Amino acid sequence: MKVFFVGFMGSGKTTWSRKLATHLGYAFIDLDHVLEEQAGMTIAEYFSSFGEDAFRTLESTILKETAYPENAIISTGGGLPCFFDHMEWMNANGKTLYLKLNPKALAERLESGKDKRPLLQDKHGDDLITFIGLKLAERESYYLQATYIVDGINQTTKKLAEIIRS
Image 1 (cartoon, rainbow, N blue to C red):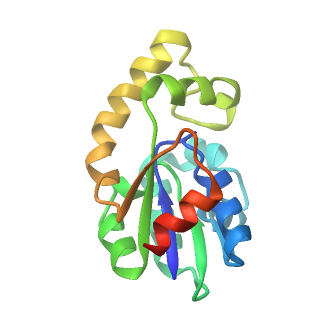
Image 2 (image 1 turned 90 degrees about the horizontal axis):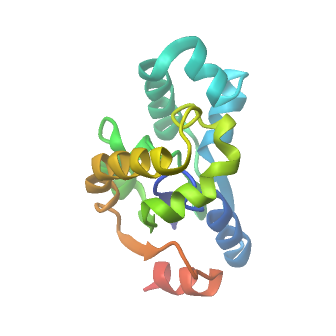
């Protein structure tokens, strides 16, 4: 089984997908890391050098051309589900799990690592919460197409394993 983790940046996709893969004995794939390896630069550098349109095109290619093992937990970028036909493609090629959090919880998690996130670099405090709220409102209709929608707070690998096995 392939499970693609989706959700806003800072929702815990990489952390929980890695833990779940280890728990289940599945392969773990972080598509952001695959993209950085293939591009030879960080996502922030790629964004800065080539812009968002080029980034989204490369991200789409990586999603659809990566060779996934039969049993894999895949962490996706926060914006990936919202472009092209990505949610439809992921749902057709596996299952999707949306880690849902509110803007305030996301802002608290993202405040310290903004330098690695091109969309957040100049946002602080209430401006950050407002920005996240607006972006989340744009993206949530895509995230809600996920096979499973789970609360990103108080999660455990055991609960996640039970959800994807149901």
